[in-house]
Length: 126
Image 1 (tube, one colour):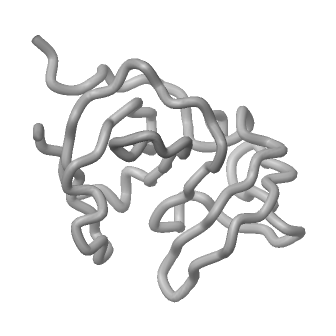
Image 2 (cartoon, rainbow, N blue to C red; image 1 turned 135 degrees about the vertical axis):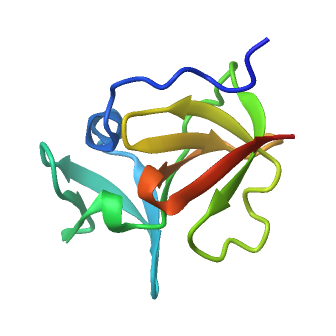
């Protein structure tokens, strides 16, 4: 029995392209952006939210709002390089990409959380 999904070669930029037109919230060091529409994803560097450019791999995490819940997931906890105050101690791991992980909260929340791998210290089974 596998505890986590296999890592795939898809990058965070490629995954974010699927969410163009959706509302996203961005959290980074000294920044917490209210939900805004994701309007553009550049090939390898920036995304555009509310007319402002962000580098997704430099954020702590990005929340994509109003997406259907994944049916396949793994119960996990995530240790991060930033203070998360237990937010990721009991969460559902949906996907591991080339440079990010994708999570969803337990319960009925219709959100996905994308965390760059450079902000992840470890994963553990719950």
